[in-house]
Amino acid sequence: MKHILILTGLMAGLFAAPLHAHGSAGKAGPNGGRVLKNVEPHAEFLVTPDKKVRITFLDAEGKATVQEGAQITVTSGDRSSPTKLTFTKDGNSYISDKPLPEGKNVPVVIQIKATADGKSVTEKFGANLAECSECKHPEYACTCDHAE
Image 1: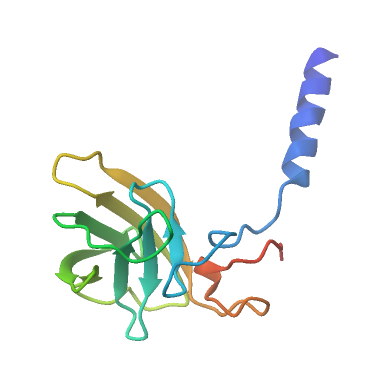
Image 2 (image 1 turned 180 degrees about the vertical axis):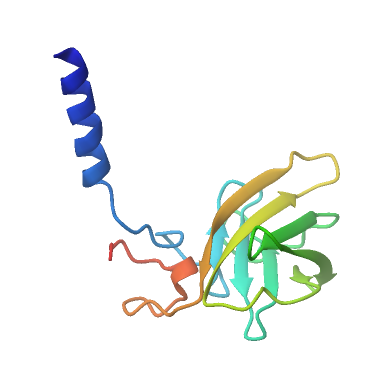
């Protein structure tokens, strides 16, 4: 009987969770991208119009800041033939050497080491490039608190 109650509680929790989690569900980055909160300092993930990825580090107020010596890689696309993006410094941010793979919703795995002696942080999510009907940000950076 105890097992049935535990199982029932777990199932209820699963069904109570949102069916579709949107982007960062909070404040967008200064350029309208997704804020990566697991890395310190926080960083903004933005897909540019030419589908390259721009990573911008943010200060405590959420404004762009210079972060020297960061090491960033993004792996995206099909698992059987992934695309690996490397980054070079571009002003106050870092830009990928090539665009994301084709598609409107591509999986991304981001690895960021903010400083040479810092800890490497990994973030994984789907970069859904469709525009949110409510906040008008791309879905990967949606700031709404809704579910589809």
